[in-house]
Length: 623
Image 1 (cartoon, rainbow, N blue to C red):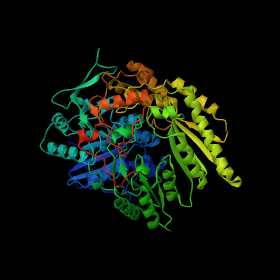
Image 2: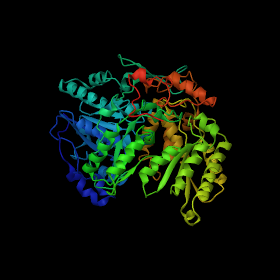
Image 3: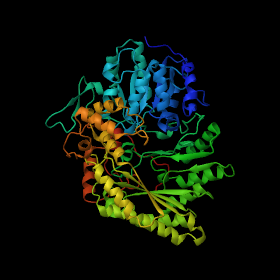
Image 4: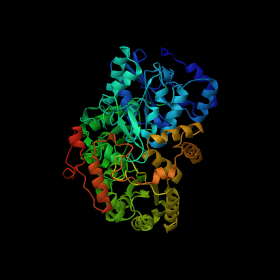
């Protein structure tokens, strides 16, 4: 029998004086929702520390949704920082939930959020600290069902052996269905294998143990999954058709500690149809669904009253694309006037409309603006389907500096398909021109406050994108191009930051590998890999040693292109975007042909709407 509910905070308490930020581990925050009397209990875990995980909207949404289900209680968990984890192992204290300080292993289901590839070793750290067998095949009848979901499940194969069931797509409706089904089967006395087989019948649920990995000639570089026992050949993502019917204020908890994103967040729209060919989220979150102006404004007011925050962020993949964004900002400015409450939005569109909205947000407080040209040359922007021009950037930055902004950050990617040295130099030239434009526009007495910075990440080929067939630029070549960028910037006032090439190499391996990568993950964790998203914790040598032991060449996995007809490790997982559309977009990229945004023009044939029976839903007219 599984352990009964018990509060074991007394075992954690003596350790708090010996760790940094002990507020990460205490409970009784304002606004928690869990019900200790429920007969089915779920623990949702974000694979990072408290201050990083608590602001996550995905966890907040599912936490709220589950706690509204009759008979279900949901608690949260986070990964203890290395100091606390080591002390817990030394003291024999298992991983505990936050609300009730109950052993995570005592829950009926444990849900692991996978926000990015670099979280994978923390998944194992979580399971080990909880005392749950790392491999699904080793779990017994009394172990919880281990679920996973999140943005990085569209190629689930590298971590599939560690998870019992993976939920593909949006979880507001999906996760409660899975939990209720598990609850019914548990109460009926069904064995674990029968439960997992039944969960696979719920649309959007991938149960890795029901798939064999075929390897050998014609099976692809990393093999491909073949279903058995009647499991679906393709698992399609779940999508919430009526996004407006979901709770716009899932965030209820007021933290003790300062968070990484310490503000109220309101999701104003879901999905993006701009079609950037490198962007996984732009493909996997389709279609576009907007909340109405009334719902957004009401949610902001209610959320601020509930939490007491002095800042609210209107979040989405592309907030300034909301068809009523200007009207919403005007209404919020009137409503929040003289309150000291600040409204923020993500990076601005590269046009005067985006600057106009940024001005509505900033008021008199003009900090910094962020633009994302992504590539330095128009040729490369056409390849990636960015659909912005250098004139757009010049107009936007000129308008920003004329309107009073003095700090500007430009985001680019390096290693994009088709990139040459000329494209790297073009990044530097664009940054230099932006700085010179600022000096031209800003009055002499204020030029000392001008700041232009470049942030350059490394392209990672992602599943379910038109560039999923591409290999990653070799890490040594990335490092050479990074030095070329630094030395090509003429003006010393322009600051350049770039993403670590070693980390990017591993991200590509985890993004495009198959189930053969699972032993590498396990081997790296056993060598001490954890919190790999933290620069000071990451050590590529651990991964290289684990890969050598498993007979895997990391650079070959990251850099070898796939053939368009080659079976891919994730062929059995579908975002709803057809493979034919992705291949067509890849060919258009090779020819430098752009594709318009279907929410502004006509259907471009990606296949999401007819396949998943959903539509773009706009609150107003997009201009």
